[in-house]
Image (cartoon, rainbow, N blue to C red; front, side):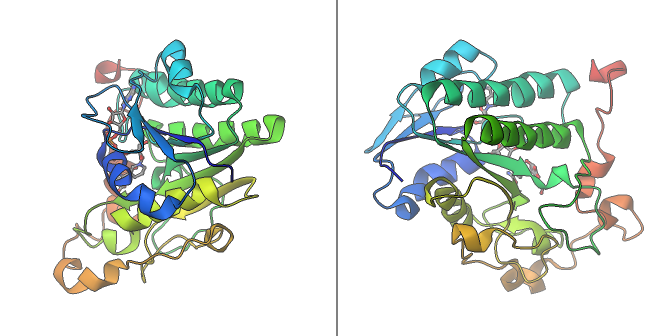
Amino acid sequence: MTPGRLLLTGAAGTVGTALRQQLRGFLGDAFPTIRLSDRHDLGTAGKGKEIVYADLTSFEEVRTAMEGVNAVIHLGGIPDEHRYKAIRDVNVDGTYHVLEAARQAGVGRIAFASSIHTVGFYPRAQTISPTVPVRPDTHYGVSKVYGEALGRMYWERYGIEFVAVRICSFQQRPNDARHLSTWLSPRDAAQLFARAVTVPGVGYMVVAGISGNTRRWMSPEGWDALGYVPQDDAETYAAEIEHLHGDPGDLTEQRQGGIFVNSGYTGLAGKEQ
Ligand SMILES: NC(=O)C1=CN([C@@H]2O[C@H](COP(=O)(O)OP(=O)(O)OC[C@H]3O[C@@H](n4cnc5c(N)ncnc54)[C@H](O)[C@@H]3O)[C@@H](O)[C@H]2O)C=CC1
Ligand SMILES: O=C(O)[C@H]1OC(=O)[C@H](O)[C@@H](O)[C@@H]1O
């Protein structure tokens, strides 16, 4: 891929902070400049980085952040279930702003932080491929389905390559039994996102965003094409965490989405307004 400028949205967040620290090690010579963007404080940029603040809900601000950009890692957004309108403004409209501004700027590749919650209602007993029908567990999950679908349209219509990484549980280390299946370590996240924006000829792809977990519920389809070889496996921590789970009779323990399958904010009534 041609060297140039990579835009990282959501750079002040949990995943963004880790990528900010570790991405360069996996990018090699690609993208000499990483542009960090968020609406919250990003501190000082550091070597090879620059900062452009933008609120995802403002198309004009996103368009300014996109000037001179060749590829995007889009992490910015609300990362959990929330009021429908907030999800719509930031995750739905905001993701549209990113893709449309990218199209206008001539961006060639976008990697998108999708989520396990696109498929959260699948039973844990089932190993799923990235191509199974979606079963979102929340409005949040639906917003990620929208992002994946929008990416598909921008690939088909405009030839912008798009890799949706269905991140499961990004954590410094796995903390409970569910994470034995869902953990994505910081260094594996950095490798996966770096490959998602550098490996040539990917077209459109949805991949599991997990480490090389022995007990994974998602198949590794697409990892070969990206050349992603995870370095971590949550199994290393099994003895410390496998007893940390809820009642096996609860839906939250039976479905891949965990507590999200039973979260609040389910509609427009009452507190959801
Ligand atoms: N942490 C995880 O395990 C998972 C994360 N993801 C996705 O990865 C992405 C990053 O997640 P985290 O770092 O955990 O979340 P985070 O909340 O720590 O980071 C999200 C960032 O987006 C920014 N943001 C929110 N609204 C914005 C707006 N209107 N304008 C500009 N920036 C805005 C926030 O300021 C924040 O820095 C999210 O899209 C999330 O849905 C998906 C699956 C799992
Ligand atoms: O389900 C999970 O483990 C994770 O999934 C997500 O999409 C969320 O952004 C994160 O806050 C959760 O912890």
